[in-house]
Image (cartoon, rainbow over all chains, first blue to last red; front, side):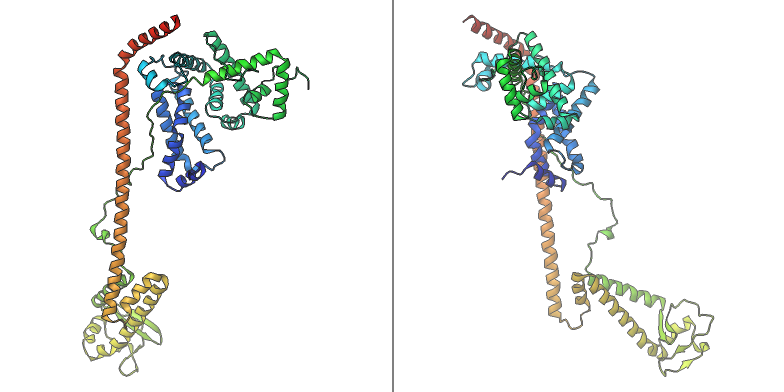
Length: 198
Length: 283
């Protein structure tokens, strides 16, 4: 039976390093993804993720379980990303468009239900989204990231950002509205999900 | 519920879009969408943005983070004698008795017990100025202070018949003291007391004594084996952790190298991709 985060946290606090390494294994991908989408650089995102786990490990005795471990970890990561952006004195960096590797498309990216054109279109859309996201204020970007990619509830985001729930909804609405405008300006029209039209 | 109430209400719109919050309000908003084209368009537009967000994925990378505890710092160098393992209680007591005995022998300690209480005097102690009544061991009569020999003289006298007479109470006192210390040691240390009785037990035979010693040695050996196994496990684990970390670093290094060398090729591939896209568009 897989141990819960809370159980692993309790064992880690008791001095079991292996339990904390299990937590790392469980959360390293989401944390890296959050850091990457916040700061936009692969190497820096990896460094920030590593630092986030290190800080969490050091601060673990002070973690009283008042929030979920994942929320606590997200908060540490976002703080580190903020520090990184202040230190670098720049907005999130958008990496130059990657060359689409045809061989890669055939071997890995191209799923049976997706044509090569679809894959190229998805990559293009992803780049436009990244660019549009980099233009958002940090609070709006964080709210969208936590909601869209990490599935946090409004309440969890509110606790993490230290603001009222209504503020979270406002940030989400404003951020999505700006994204919509930016994407339309770029000539990108994302397809609606199946059955999404009202 | 009025239709206009929902128009421009971002709070309700977000609850509806993310299917979170009060269900009745969301159902009311859904009913509102059927009659409000502007809100319906907005919902569609935001849903489109949400589907577009799914296209943004972070690049694959090797993470493999691990917390690795460094081995504890080596303790400060201690003198060789400090490295001697802790002795059992009975051995400590035997050593202490030996030290006390030697010290008593060297100092010419004189212990007396009389009506005025217990008197302990070292051989080099100057005689007290105040006369002291000392009970003679031989006849039990009190003798004047002037008859008490000086410490140096006492040392000489112990070799004679009078000193032999004094030895009996000294030994009795010392034996009583020894018994008291033994008793205290037994009370203070349960397991240790058992070992202490081994050294002091007068009724224990040689065979029983040997069996006891063998038992102690066997217990010590098994404890050392357990410690050795534990340390070996720790070493193996540290080695494995280090090896995995090194492998991850090597993999990262190769990945970075491939990224650099592939940069030149990337432009040509991009051109090729462009051609693929153009050719598919013309079809």
